Length: 227
Image 1 (cartoon, rainbow, N blue to C red):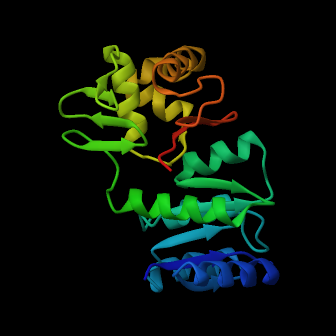
Image 2: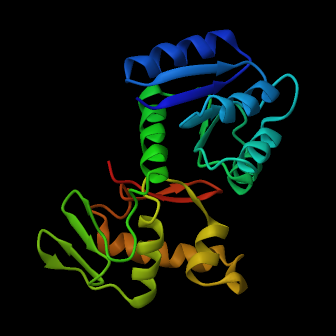
């Protein structure tokens, strides 16, 4: 049973999450402020942290930095702050995902499962394969197929796909992707990235105009959705 720490100063939110997470098989521990959250994340050996940013003692962004300095525990931000700058800052500080309030519990549970999978090393890397619906990715053989039929990708398209697949169901910022695939010199070339994402969608999506595989996180980046 995975142990989830909920850091939120609103009792009704903590109660709702305690019930919802418990119903999905998680053990829940709670903290009502940032300092307690930092302490309990380490002392109680949390497997995942759900963190609000608007805390009464210290800002949630600082909590991310403090936890990340001592632990690699997955952090899913759950906040009413929905501005692009807040999302990017949280992810840059080390959060694994960001869900804006109000939220759907189904989506939150999916993000929790994805963060735990990624933390356990269940992403696709060199020498691994990944199946998403009818698509099969074989990264050792550099082969992508749909129902057995090969889909040709350029070298750069394949590298982009592999980078996204290294953290499935996990939001990756534009900066992370550009740096990881093209190098630091291209860290700000978001228009360049958009062109390659569109090319991948044309080749992989059932409906490129309504992508279900490579999903845009507006103003932040992209995620490879597997479920």
